Image (cartoon, rainbow, N blue to C red; front, side, top):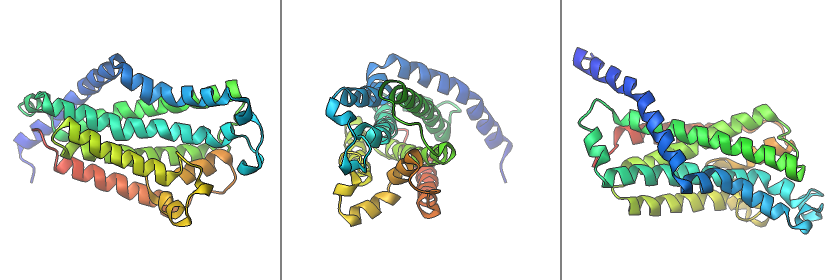
Length: 259
């Protein structure tokens, strides 16, 4: 049974959540690196590649499509990986090293509130990244909009949630910013390589392609929803992402380290 003291503490923690989200939002907007690499970099990179004439010509290697058409979803995933797998672990680990989390531990703020605030800000940044990239690609490079917008929204939400959950798990368990950076970079490279972001998936071995279907953020499901070349995403792929998100988020909240 939950005691009155526990109920009061939980209520105080939840009431502090909007303030935490507001503070984290301001800190992110003041950080040029986050804005540059997390939100603007994918769009700038895609537009930069689109400035190369050869990459705007239809190619048989991409089934008659242009490179910029094929790679636009991958550019978005590149940015989501930066926000989900690098920004959150680095930020929280830095707070831990500077003693900010230790001071928070003396207040009613709970570990869940700290992590939820990070998730909300990262989610907003991810949506901003997607809107900016899709709009720029359409207006500047004439890249088609996602052909199955609802499936794309679903795969984006599930895939990004799984990335964010892994990010908060790393943030919750790593004691130093240096270790958090190392683990986060390893997770980022695995996700991007298996997903075929660095190299088109048709160049990858079949085993790595199949593995990439289940590795967050589920790149193939997002590619299919954007291109419209396939039907609804496979439930096994989305279900795996949901399980990863729930499991990683639960473990992160349970084993969060204040110091």
